[in-house]
Amino acid sequence: MVEVKTGATTAKSSEDQKTRRLWLVRHGLTRWNTQQRFCGHSDIPLSAGGRVQARWLARRLQEEAIAVIYTSDLARARETAETIASQSTQAVPVKVSTAWREIDFGAWEGLTYAEIAEQFKDQLGFFTDPEQYSPPGGESLAHMLQRVMDELATTARSDDRSVQGDVVIVSHGGPLRVLLWRILKMPLERQWQLRIDPGSLSALDLLPINEPWVPRAILASLNVQRSRGAGRAAKNSASPEAASGSLRIEGVM
Image (tube, rainbow, N blue to C red; front, side, top):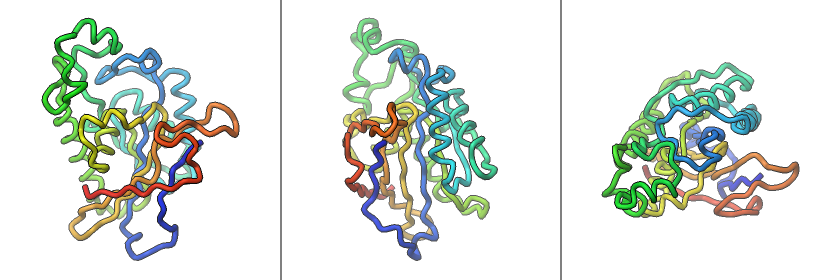
């Protein structure tokens, strides 16, 4: 398993009092994921392999100080979230929100890219210029980004005393990818290069710059997955064997 860590020390500082760890989880595999079909808002359940991934995620997060889990309302995300909560060492509430849904792919849902390219050959602008084009009958990337960032801001600014531990967000490839794109300040067309696989775990540390909350975000780990073989590192698209490396990527949200 590869986990790319920040270069920051683990020593506590005064700023740590308000630091919030966000664990970003993409739901486990579905049959459509395996077939490389666009899922979008279609409510596809986890496959058997996806449930294995969900149990691994639950074990991986079991000893973390999880205070709350936010999840998309779609079955594949909700089941992943509920599996994580069920294995926690303490009672963890699961809060469902449509804001964490995958982008609505409209007429493309249930199709592979090859089928889309064949059936919608004159309507493929979304893949090269997502700021200007949307899937036919679907949602714009700008709309998805807005709902995701609004929901994240609500989470980051929460001063509920009952929510003092880590926060887990169980969502989909699209929302997690644009969230990280926003933090890393990549050109929008390059957000497709951010690999967020089904059943993967990434982490963001949100640190306040001032009051009211204006968080600085540090990417602590990216696309951590269950190893396919005991003792072998899971492949990471950005850094295949980078367990000994360090990564500190900051951005102001």
